[in-house]
Length: 255
Length: 336
Image 1 (cartoon, chains in turn red, yellow):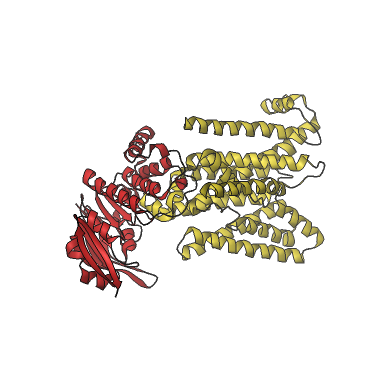
Image 2 (cartoon, one colour):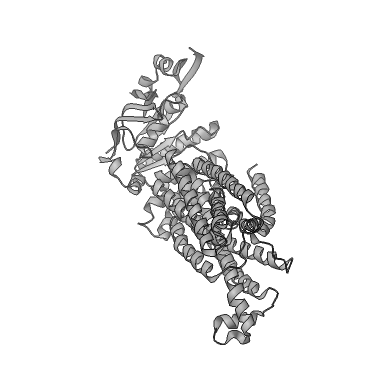
């Protein structure tokens, strides 16, 4: 029972974006996807969610090839938290979260749907915002809504594309803690692309490091984020260590 | 409670539309009382105590005119809501896709080559609009359909068809020119039952199609193609279906009423402001609002400067542009 990519290849516009990716995401784990800009993190997430069709290789969710799953069934298995951006044409917070039920809408009554949405709103302390336009919220609140929508989707796997990139320090930690608690409490498998190496090391069960469309290393952060590898992949010399059990990656100088 | 408020809004707007529709059928050079209009509508055989001439004015001129204005407003507004939703762009309207200018060009060419015959004109406008839609869709498909490409292709074609029409006007005789220009303004003047029947049928056939995609439109509005796909919608299928339905609606209206801009742009904004962004409510409400706006504009156009009738396409701009700017400024203030 995993979300599995096997020898995934992707080319777009003459460029190789993914080059033979093998990766498995298990339920109950938080896997952080790291790598420089353009390494292929977003591409991998889009392929894993069936938004982009890979040029080679397969993606399977719990043994079913994505290519043979109807779009709605796929949405019930995998939820996607996009990067923030763009207006939402006046949709309210409640309407945004309700969209998480889109793939379930033919299987539940409107009353059941309202009850689920209400409980998700409560779980993320979004009740006071329910009727507010999504566009009028702050970045941190918007991120909470997007995660809440994915939770309403009730999927076994969740893919998050840089959920912290638009947030200040405090809200970054809030968002990461929410994902961590979600994984621990409901046993979903979460794959999160993120730029903050230290935060990834702190919150993730495993780290997957990408560079130029390939997976460089996968595993415990201490094994993956070595100074040598950071120099090789990011071109930065860095000190790696822990203070009071909290990992840090301190970039020293550009090589 | 919010649901109650929304139900009141829709019901109230519908009621207002009905009252205004009855009122417009009374107005004109010959005044006919509301009681008489109602009686003639409810029991046609009694004729509401009206004479032959009044009945002829009522059924031959005013009823089809009122109905066409309602149908045109509702259709253009629905198409606008759908196109804005699917492109996730609040500045899009059927006009932006180039469909209205294309239809206008088709009509102009018909006037020039075949003369001003109703059926020919309509057919040419319809074909030209569909051709434009096919080109826009084709281009957008080639470049990997995205909202931006769709809009850019539409803007480009708008200019092209505008230039083509201008070129035709250059070579047209004075008589032909008068017809082309009148048509380009957009008017429900001289609406026929035939027009009401055809445009009405198109609206009745396509609106449920769009409404059936309300969830998908919400998903597109929430985050574009990728988010819609991840939420379980078949993006390409929805996009083609919604676009075709909107194009068909627009082409039908432009064919019979000429180029009426702005309703398709502003009605969705009014709708969002009053009832919110959920397309399940936004589509029907904007359709009602668009019908109301167009009916009001036509009433103003033919009564304010009577006996001169100002085409509804012009009045709509006078009414709509200040409203639109007001909405834009308000939006800016809220997001700032």
